[in-house]
Image 1 (tube, rainbow, N blue to C red):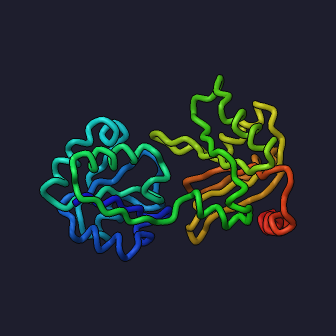
Image 2: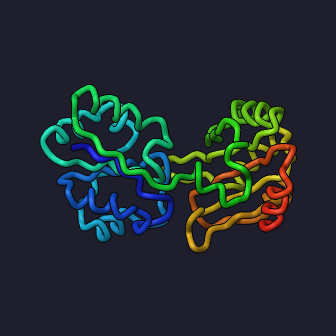
Length: 238
């Protein structure tokens, strides 16, 4: 059996009861560690789960996942994903490969940034295409093009921020937007679901002056026409 388990956004305690029960049944526990980061260490996860964790980078998951699949043919294997299981499309390949090999599958969902941002007060069904700002962005225009298209259609834009050895900050993302002549009101979100989460709504020139301390971080540019409830909600974060 291969379990796909979302483990939430913040720390080791965000896993669901069903997810934790599934982990207890598994001999091998893999953690996808390249699309996001928790506000706890791998050792914290191991202590809480009472299991040894094997880190799985992008190359391993996308091109060398046969190790996971071969083990899942004979043993219970858990594949852990920060947030929800399929918020990052890279994980669907593992699901497809497992189904081709007729491996039994169980999917256990959890919160992801894609639904947790509802706390900001913007209507989720009014979000347009999601985009990401990469670290090496000097000649990258796709995020700006996505934003402009969303804005034309009166939709909100969620900007996810890059991750490699480091995590991109809101300030770095805002610098990119400013360099591309974006001067809208924006929402900065850091450490969503953490007890000390930070949500700020400002003009971009004012928000960039604020230092956000928690991770991961993301940016939202609201659509140009807001419902009065959305306007009222955004006032909470000024």
